[in-house]
Image 1 (cartoon, rainbow, N blue to C red):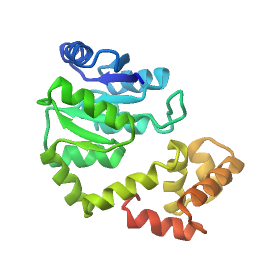
Image 2: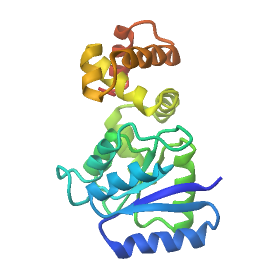
Image 3: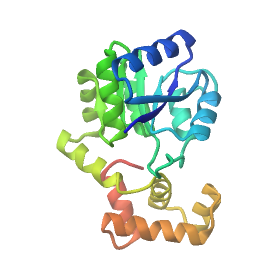
Length: 224
């Protein structure tokens, strides 16, 4: 199956090079459907094209100055045509721990540096599209240390989160932070009835019985 990709980087030559090399390395596997050079351009392209994967640089002009983090936050709730959450793979020259942790906390599924080969990058894109978490070897240590879990526990958290849609994750985090249904509805511009439906779905998928258990579940995984 072809993976639909948006590439986000503030250098035109780099975006062009990535497209060219990936199309040569993995013909028929990747389809580029959009691109962006700024936070605003990227959010607009992602919302318009609803790609499977976004290749995302972490340092971008625009937004609130948080670069790739702003892009991820600006695309909260955007889903692919198939109804899956749009997934983000950070592709950056930076291998600084603070950059890695910030973009992963924001919701990226992986982080690789620009030294990666085109073949390996194509593989990483496919894995992220399939729901895996992908990191360059040295960067994986930052994530494990920051979240204080073993690699097996990360896989468990990912598997549980993957049961939830992007909108259900938004609702889950707000409810876990103590928001009332009316407050969640106002925050997400949806009806109270829709919030109730999402909460019921989240509890069912996570096999929990109350919002108190949901809060404990989210806190135990450092999602709030």
